[in-house]
Image (tube, rainbow, N blue to C red):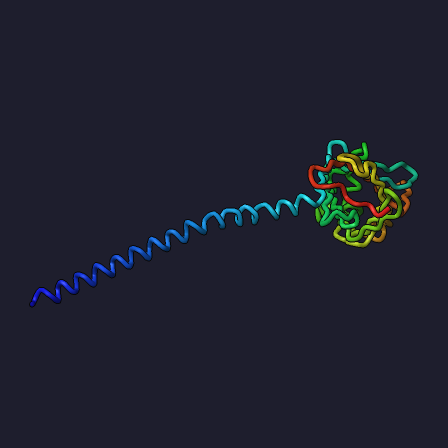
Length: 227
């Protein structure tokens, strides 16, 4: 009679182990059956962001084939280029008006062909490259003015002073995978604290900047023009 409680306990333990084993097997089967459903969900999650990204035009600007020039009327011609700069064109949708143009220029890369003029332009009287090494333009608004022409309003910064200026652009290459944008922006140098002149040289206040940026569309559809 003393063995019966032991036998009972043994039987109960056996049934408990059997129940636990079966529960674990059921859980394993459930996880295994759920796995085929999880895999497509992960694939879809990874795929959809890429598909959405592919619907946005993606552009690259080719600096080697592009130029940024400037000129100012004066008794002695002052014209030159900037040798070091970067530019980007980004779109948040297929609407061409969603485009943003950013240009960053290293002020000390100015090249007029004259060392004396370059040094004067780099000085604190003009570009002040020591304290303000970058000249930038960051567009904030795009207005299409013709089939392939645009006015870009943006924040223009030189000598650490930022003001709103307008860059007038023509897009050569509408709908294709490569082309160029050519534009002009004019500003008053005295608005940015460039009040000095060069000795014996009379300089006008109006400065004109010309950009010619070669671009290629590396992915996504072409932007949709409004005209």
